[in-house]
Amino acid sequence: MPKVAVVFAGEEEFGIDIGKVVEILKAQRVYLLPQLPPFLSGVVNIRGEVIPLMDLRKRFGIESSSAKERIIVIRSDGEKVGLLVDGVKEIVTLQPEEIISPPAMFKGLRMEYMTGLGRRGNSIIIFLNLDTLLTSEEKIQLGAVAKTMGVDHAGDEKISQ
Image (cartoon, rainbow, N blue to C red; front, side, top):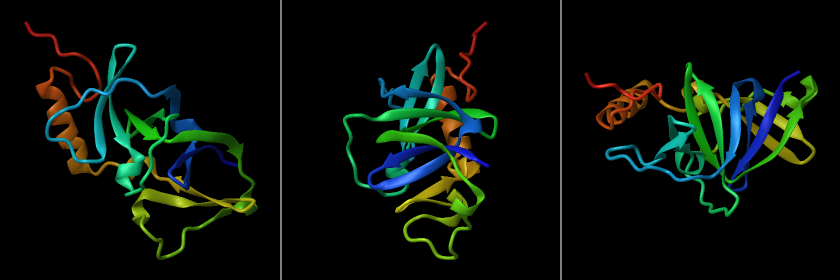
């Protein structure tokens, strides 16, 4: 039975596999980088580690502004990425009967971003496929921009000799 962190962006609820969550933080200073795609807010410095920050609201075209924003640090393809969301609702364990396959057509959300849907009462939780939130091209672009700042994509500072 999957255990998921249920987060929200606007009115939508998203489920993130708890096994991929590194930590949940209050929003903090975001360092803007040039030439990033619009849904990437920049990078955050978490205890000396530079982590790219993706705004889920912008990624999915959701209008929202919350005073209680949270950053969910996850592992995606072996890299840490921060997800900016409006808040964290709960951490739940879903029963098999609460999980359904995504419909063939899903309004406003490309299928590769989701692995399924969860039903909890009257709510629908969209399970995110964390490994596809950034395309290969976007990961390369992010890595290139980070290197120009003296930081490699894994977050380690470059040492000049």
